[in-house]
Length: 175
Image 1 (cartoon, rainbow, N blue to C red):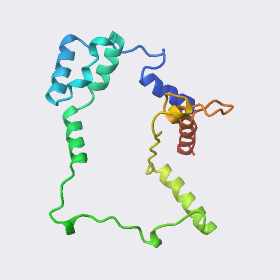
Image 2 (cartoon, helix red, strand yellow):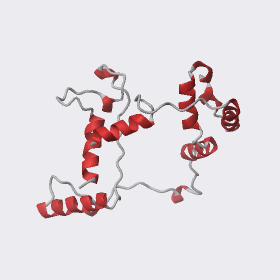
Image 3 (cartoon, rainbow, N blue to C red):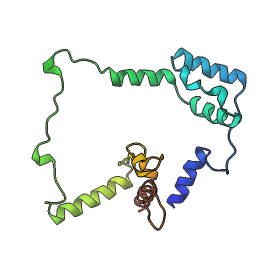
Image 4 (tube, rainbow, N blue to C red):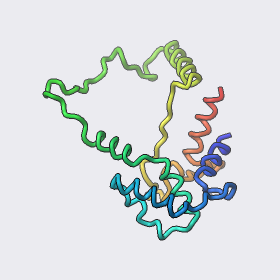
């Protein structure tokens, strides 16, 4: 199940031998893409273009052609330079949630826990839940150059933490 999902992702990234890599773009297509990125001030993404082989050029081109560098610049600028409030009083203030808006599974009634569990499954079934799975950098302290979520933690199945999470997510989606 999850292995199929992972293999699908690997195939889309051309990391298996099952799907041939895309062809190198024509010089004309490459020039158009280079101009688009240069105009946006992002030509550095092509810094190693002459150092990679035709298959790698095809894969890089296929990734970059679907990105709008002007849009990326715009959202990056807005994220790094949010609008300033007109006055200090107008600035949104972060406040702690009231106690009535928070709960803990450690001190809640069993009826509440069952209700939350059921509601959670309903939200999942209605596609109203998103999962963001991240690993906080490389596992260098673990002796690995891969992301921590890919590290083999010695399970008999030899599954990574990412794969275990993906399998759980897949299982919940199909309940």
